[in-house]
Length: 121
Image (cartoon, rainbow, N blue to C red; front, side, top):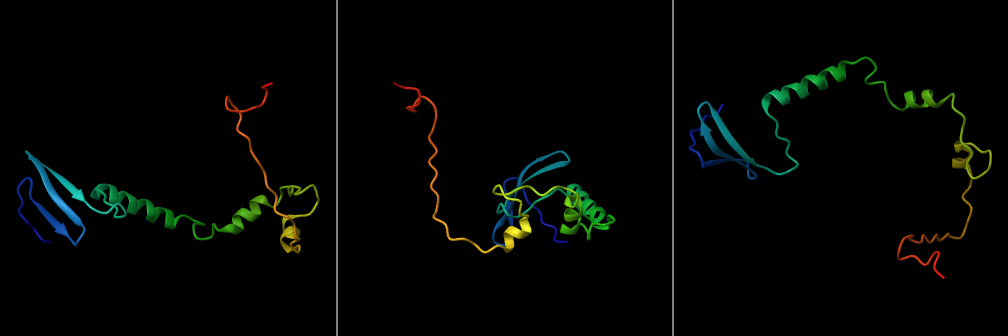
């Protein structure tokens, strides 16, 4: 462990882009300012240890590794397939169907409100 002595207002760098500044010393407390990139996560030690413990518990939970898409498909197995496009084809039938050449459709949405011409005569 590297131990440095700093006075309030003095700083130190970790790498090229993390700056640690001693902001204030009050009794047994030291206020530290950290200037670091926003993608760098900074935690107090007790919070970091709590996160590690929760991650460990989640990894040890039964079925944690097996909870993939198979669980989703079994949950939806008993449900009725929605009708798409007015027909009675299933999603798998639609995905295997050959694409048909159709003209692109253009939809115009008009804004309602005081600027609208609806209802004016």
